Image (cartoon, rainbow, N blue to C red; front, side, top):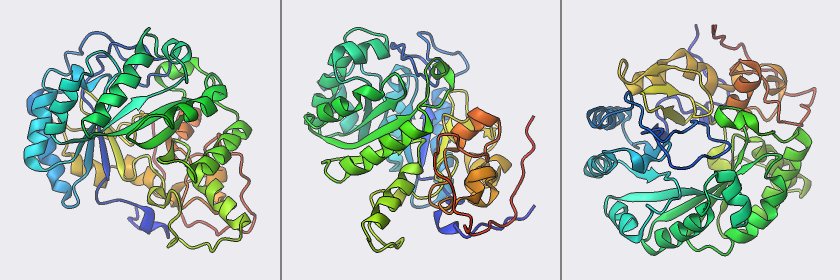
Length: 375
């Protein structure tokens, strides 16, 4: 097998990830309709313990500088019995950390002061409805909307940056403009990430958008992104980059990758490329939404898994894409959602079915691609 990288090598991060998502536990007090983890009220006895988490932090040093940023997620990472010990060790090691907690009454001013002192740089909260009625129905717990708004206020007062996440599906699309208006009233938001549903976990009970509707949402996001006081991005919908570039071309903007475009830092395939996900049992995946196991940190060093596993090498190089994504002239800066392609077809390099775009016939021909045999 050749180790040759495609012409998009400037967007291929084969040496180190920028973000490492660590699912400390699947224990959670919420019952969200779209939960990837199908979180439970009880702890899994096989979840990562303190010593294993400490060893993982040590192993991450093997990536060298700049060190990856670690996001502790779940479930609710604050339900892990040693989460504060892990944050303390990361602070001692100089590893940047963020938290993705569940919005419950556990998020107090005292808690935010504590994690601020432990050098937590940001938290993410979810808002899937503009009102208590719509958000609480989606999250499965009455009072979740109020807890989310209170948590955002307290985090801002503690000096912690906030990212808000919103799911977009047929169930939530009508509320998106109202959610945006609500977010505009909240202080301290650095980023709004709109997640386009992938049918995994409990999310299989929800309905994904059609490609046409998804295209309309992305055009709207590009427009509001120019006026918003916070960054606007998508999760598992990299087509936003193509929509942005098309709009810039229509406005006769100078097109060069040196331009400060809205999402240039996010160019390239994201799943497994600059990003990795570690489950509560130590399994390593290209992302939390792609159950394509590449190894386990209890058996193999995380650096070796990321750099050398066949799964990661396959997924992160656009030269390996097939179908419409492999034909597309935007494949190097977009690449489609590899997680959605995998969920829809069982192949991590197939075309993303959410994309409406038809590639030009004269698009640059791609070189030969790797093939991974999966059971």
